[in-house]
Image (tube, rainbow, N blue to C red; front, side):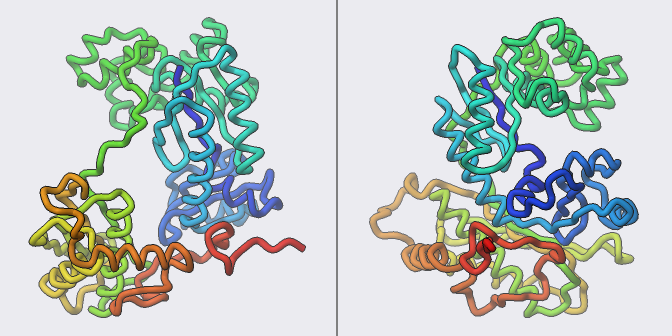
Length: 414
């Protein structure tokens, strides 16, 4: 059987964990630069605050109902996610980490409902975060079971398809919109609705071969999965990434070369750290920057594709390459709104046809700097291009402390 464990309202739950006054209060968390609402407590949902709603559109509703607003605190969320995932790894035979707050588990128990409650209690006791568990024969059904566990309080946070009355499951599937199914977005939902497929049950009872002809093999597999035929196994070993992307929309417009160089140098630092953590090397880099298409008469985007002479994981080599590209495409007088880098042509370091006992130039230095950053602080060592409080950095006016990742911001007990 497959279980999907999903943390309830993950970002909000992380904020509540360190501020108990937020319990039972409406809370929202905002996206980069405090732009849109990306996480809501159940109380905020009940007020009609929608996912993805621009913050400025919701401000009247937020003020009227005393909604607590937080900027995204990614270091905190990443650390809490790691704690949940490490704990889940000890509770299953195989694990596939699907997202920052979701994980598929392969489980084999005599009483699946009891095991689901054990998972919930273990995460709550050891990490402090509430989760729901959906258990079924396939990933698609496990996702649907998890949705039911969240939506219907009668299930107490756990739904197992094999241990639930089939008539009840059919009734619920007739109520659940097809748009709630795993892999069905707004456009696909519209096309399915046009064919008269409105609910999860409608898709389950559709002809799989017919759906393949109209849509694709993925839709055929979805129908099979809804009928308990597994098409997507647990992927406990993640395939290597094709690209590593690091980009940001700026907190304010950037029109000085120095500020853009600061941003690009920081993106290179973060991307190269990801590269080394995954034991990968890169040979290609794409550098891009653009203005705000909504606040300018003309949309401007400058892109350059760069090739390194060899595969490398060195921060120093990648930084030199990026700065070479920046000199070529930066235009004075443009108010830039976003920039980023993409590392491509990735290869696993151990598979390169070279003597890796002699590491590439800068490899040992980069690893040494990584170790110092891990021990002390992420910004304790920076390149000459970088600054600690660059003008380009994200706007985060309501950010909570890094309670678990910074010695200077530990929670104080009184």
